[in-house]
Figure 1 (cartoon, rainbow, N blue to C red):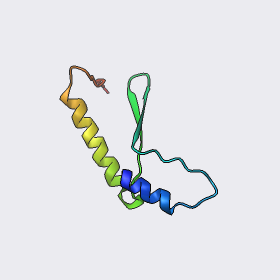
Figure 2: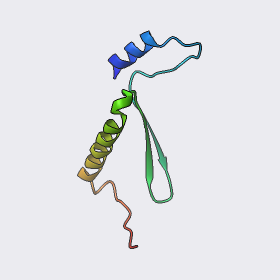
Figure 3: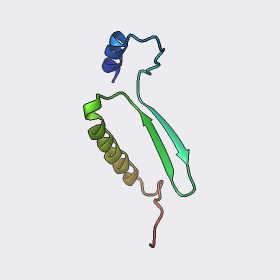
Length: 77
C-alpha cells in the first residue's frame, strides 16, 4: 500500500488537498448487539470488491480462532 500511496501522491495534482495516510486505518464502533469495523485503505478500483471480500474472510477467520474472546449473538428466528 505504501508504494501505491507514493505513486498516487506523485500523480495527483488537484487544487483540493487530499490526505492519504501511509497505511490502512480501522475504526471500531459498537452497536446494540454487534461491533462494526470501518476500514480505509487504498486499492485499485477494479480490485476493490475482491480485496473487500478477502479482508472480510480474513477478519472472520481471526475472530473464529478465539471464540473465548469473541462471542457472536445467537438468533432464534
